[in-house]
Image 1 (cartoon, helix red, strand yellow):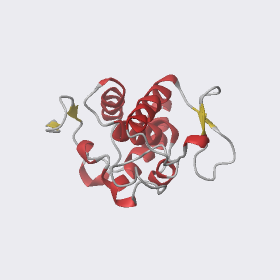
Image 2 (cartoon, helix red, strand yellow; image 1 turned 90 degrees about the horizontal axis):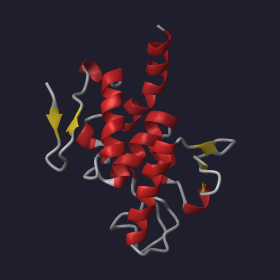
Image 3 (cartoon, one colour; image 1 turned 120 degrees about the vertical axis):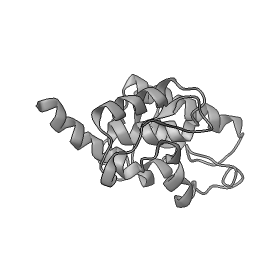
Length: 157
């Protein structure tokens, strides 16, 4: 059974039973959703892609600031990771879309993810906001992050 978010035209992959991570075909659907569907909110896309491909936690994305992004090298500094994370072209494109969305707010907030509630200040998006940003896909960020391990096992078989 496939589900679809009323706010988007692209169907969301159905969740797996017992809270397990998305299967490989579901990961591919999520990737396509976040990289090709213009109706997907840029925050959903960037949180999803950074979790799926780079294992980024909600906290790491929530605290990501503009000065953590190296445009020339196409890298980001995530949380307390010792080195900048190089982004693949798809992740970089999704991040650029998120930054364009941020730019439209005309804000001095230093964070990459800016919401209506944070545009006038300097605080990051709320933890509650980040905990629901992937709701349309029915997978929490923690489940998306765990696919990196799940997918690597699948590709070796």
